[in-house]
Image (cartoon, rainbow, N blue to C red):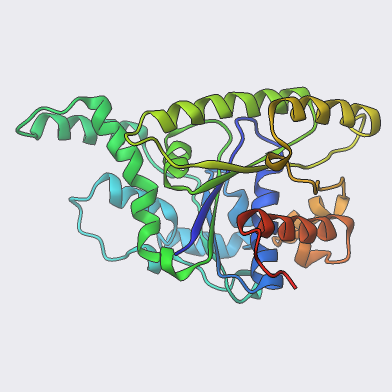
Length: 299
């Protein structure tokens, strides 16, 4: 049964997708793990990090994306031909064990969700509060999509959109652990603090409270002044709020190859395997596995 992890941050541009796809690729290629990447961001960055645009366009025309599955949960009264397994794209980038549940630029209609849930509260014999109906839907949405294929994988990595929308909350509820990518800058730290507050509140909304822990914060560095003394100052602030176990020792250095890999529609660990960024992701993956299972033999 797969361990489900969500990659999240309230702020965009912190390397969320870069972390997700490279970690997933390293797990599959170097450690022979079965890994599924789930793209829950309408910018489809994770999808286009492992798949060329013309291939994505073909999938979208055939409705072979996660939006089909989301709509299936929203409107269960419509007869559907396909399930989650039919949407999986296997061996992306030619890597055995690395699969993708493609995203879509149109994931769901909030008005339709509200309308369906409102009607549901009106049609029940014993009237249900709209808030309760919404929470139940939030709890079931992503969980119900992943459950049919969960036993196929060792890890399912969910790439969420910046912010805190319905899909992100549902992904958090479905997850066992979560990762926070961050830049060593003040606004990124504010995003972490806001996210932690909201996750704490979300966990307490359920009875019993959600069993969900932070696996760690991963720092992805950028250029300019964000180095040396300034970086150390930011890290010191982080250590005041989090334990050493909650911050990954490995950080991802500034590397132009990481940006270039996006243009090739593949992770940097495949596009430039000898680059500084790739080597850092390999090291990060080993640290990731030790955090997941301290007794694991990583040869």
